[in-house]
Amino acid sequence: MKQELSSVDLHFLIQELKSIEGGLLGKTYSSDKKKIFIQIYQKDLGKKFLTYHHPFIWLGLKKPAGKLSNFATFLRKYYERAKIVSIKQVGSERIIELIIQKEKTAKIFLELFGQGNMIICDENNLILYPLEVQEWKDRLIKKGEKYDWFKKNKNCFEQTEKDFRNLEIKENISKTLAINLNLGGVFAEELCLRANIDPKNEKVNQREKKKLHDQFTKLLKEKLNPQLVYKNSTLKDITPIKLEKYSSLEHKPVSSFGEALEEHFLILDDAPVENTRIAQLQKRIQMQDEVFQKYTKQIEENTKKAEFIYTNYDKIELLLKKGRELLKSQATNDKIKLDRKNKRITVEV
Image (cartoon, rainbow, N blue to C red; front, side, top):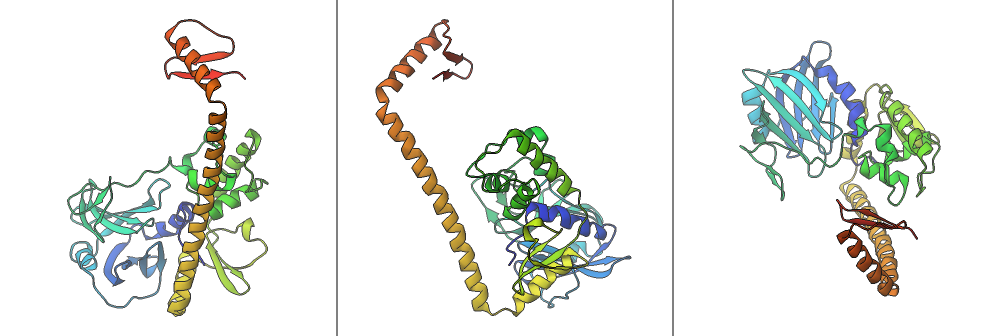
């Protein structure tokens, strides 16, 4: 079952959400703190709901229960019938920026990562009203603060062939793509399959890195073709395009990504609470196991390095001594290269 939207999912979803540009905001509803429904009036679409159900967002038809939170009341009071100027993804982050216009221009940021949030700002990104006040060591989401987001990585949609060639593989190529480029596990593996590279490979040559870049560029240009993916009659995933990763599984094409996500949540709403809780715990156990494996491997690698240093301590100490002497002097050595600016020594062995 799909757990979240990746940055690539969002890249494709925006193609669909663009249809609300030029429309008007209607009434806002909230069935609970992390479920916000904004009614959209658009001449070509009729009445639909921009549905924020952390960590998902979609344009759907399902009418919510008529409850009102303080956040929904604020939106109704100040921005009902505001014109939707634009909607876009912020770089390759899992954040959507909605620009609206009434008496003044305002922005609504919808965060689909971490704890999730929806933040109403003025045109200069000054926070007017957040769905939830949140505080981190270097980030504060609160009325009166300047809105900013965690900039973890360079925009992965702007990665050049050179950027791909400079990728440092950690653990394996699939995990490197998933984490370093913020692609998520599904699209990282898909990229490897399209480039005919084993996702578990720990080493990838320059030719293969070029193939990965070429396939990524090609993938991003595909047209939206949303699919419900089933395994043994159970919904396994929802994808914005058809993926080779799921080539052996049953597919059900749907007319919109929003329709697929809405069907996903209709299934969840009908599922017993116990089953949902079990699925959440299983996901948490899986994530904890992956973290455990990662740090176990790091411990093994660092232990080997420590043993090597201990065994060769005298030689290393002598080498460092000679290196310091060379740094202080202007002498040169064919086997020792000095980077005086960064105080780095490279020894040919």
